[in-house]
Length: 443
Image 1 (cartoon, rainbow, N blue to C red):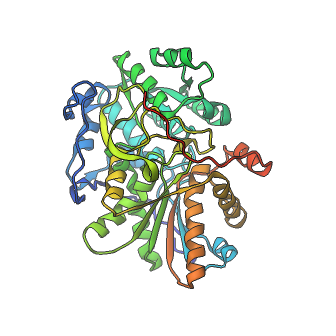
Image 2: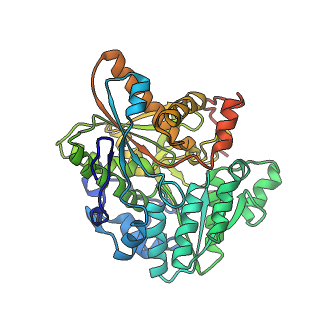
Image 3: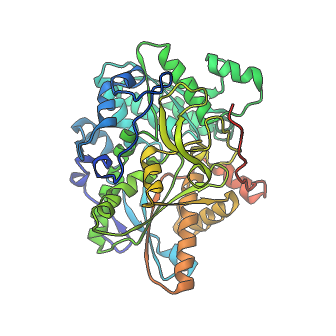
C-alpha cells in the first residue's frame, strides 16, 4: 500500500536474503581473541558457547545469505513493517525537513529484537540444542528470545539486569507468558553472581554481569547454548531485513534520505536500518549522513576507547575489537536499559572509526522531551531507547529550520514504550535525572 503518509509492502516482498556488510568494509574486522591465550579464535572454538551454523554466519564473507523459509514464515506474522512519514511531528517542529520512520514496534514483543531472535532459535534448534541462556537489559531482548524459543520448543533462561527487573516488571511478565525463566542479575544462581553480591549486596547489575552469568550457565549445561541480542556480526546481519525493506519503501515514495539515524546500545537496530544504505556509501553511489545516538550516561562511541575488550564483566567471552568504556563499567540507572552496555558492535565501531558514521550522545531529560512531543503528535509512545533516535531527529530537523534547508531525515523506531510508562511517570513528576559519563577504574 502506498498512501501519502504510510508505505507498506506485501508479504511477498519480505526480503529473502540478509545483507552481510563484511566483504564491503574498507578495513576488515579484527578477529575475536581467545580469552585465555589472546590468540585469534576460529569459528570452531566459538562453538563452546554458540552453535556452529551461527558461527559460520559470524565469520562469513558472503555478501548475501539466504533466510530459511521457516524463519520467513514466522517473521511474516508482523513483517514487512510500515515506513511512516511523521507529518504532524514535522508541523510541530515547524521544520522544512521531511521526517520518516521505520516502525519496528509492531512485532509480538514490541521491538526489532525478534528479527534476530527467531533465526537464532531456528538455527539452534537445527543444531540439536534444547535450551538457550541469555541476558537482557530493558527486557526487549529477553521477551523476543522467549517468544522465539516458545515457537521452536526450546527452553529459555534469561538473566535480567536487576535495575530493569525492578523498573520494568511487565517485561518479566511477558517473558513468563512465553514460558521463559527470568532471574534478576546479579543472582545467587551462578558463581559469578554470588561473588559480585558478596562484594556488593545492593548491586543493581549491568549487561556485562548478566552476560557473564548467562555464559557460566551455558558452560554448565551441555544441552544449552548462549544467545546474544546485539553486538555480534550475525545479529546485525539478521537485522538488515529492516533497511532492505526500507529501501524498497523509499523507492515507492520517490524519496531519498539525507540523514539516517538510530539509537545504539550494542548496535543491532541501527545496523539493521543503516547497513543496507551504508553499502551504497561504500560503493561510492550515495553519501548519506549516518548518526548513531547513545546516552551520555553510557557513551561508548563518543567517550570510549577503540580497543580489544571482553564482552562481559568477568572475562569469559572472546575479546573483540570495539569502542568500550571498560568491562567493569556499570551505567547509572537510566530508563534506557537497552543502551546501558559498556561496548559497541565491532561493525558499528569499525564504521565510526573509519569516519563513515557519526556518533552523538544525548541527555536523558531532553530525550524524554522529544519522546513526549512525538507521542503527542504521532500517537505512538516510544521506548526510552528509541527516544534517543527521536532526540537526534529533532535536533537535525531544527538545524534544517535554522538553515532553511529542506532535507529528508530517516530514523528507526526500534520499539514501543507501552511497558515503559513508569519512566514517563518519572519524567512528568520531575524525578528523572541527567547523567554524564564518569570513568570507572578497571578491576
